[in-house]
Image (cartoon, rainbow over all chains, first blue to last red; front, side, top):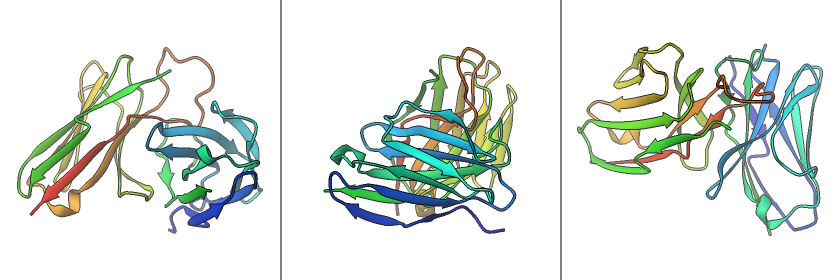
Length: 113
Length: 117
């Protein structure tokens, strides 16, 4: 069974631009969670989607948004990029998102200049 | 919020040595996960522990959850260079958390392991 895939793997943007990251979960998994990882803050939860609905959201500004499609693939969007948005963005999938192992993708490394 | 403290922050061992990484919470842990991460890459799932006193092993890695479910340890026997990386513990909701924790894991800051030949 294929693992979680994320595209693109690397991205360079400039301040003020917007970016869209994509995540394809493991087949059969309906929950997709997004995390931001930085050296200063570690792994921080962004949001979680299940059956095309956002069920949970972390403490991030409204510039961070996401969506999930009927095939469980998910995208996250960051508008008006700031230097501090430079990070590794990881998505993880599980069957239902509750009390189950989350399997992570390889991440998208975003650099904002 | 659930806070997980990992120790040590970094560890440098010679190949063949045993080592232990600890993950401690001030709250009861409901679902404790161990992951390994190569720098700049995704997290690789190692093991999940749920019951107090539970112990699981895979190859040379053993993870335990104490009876009170507030501390977990990860032990590597006869370390190899392939064990090098960042080890992260993550946990599900605790009984004291408020708000939704659906699809959310709380993570420690990680332990950087270096194994030199």
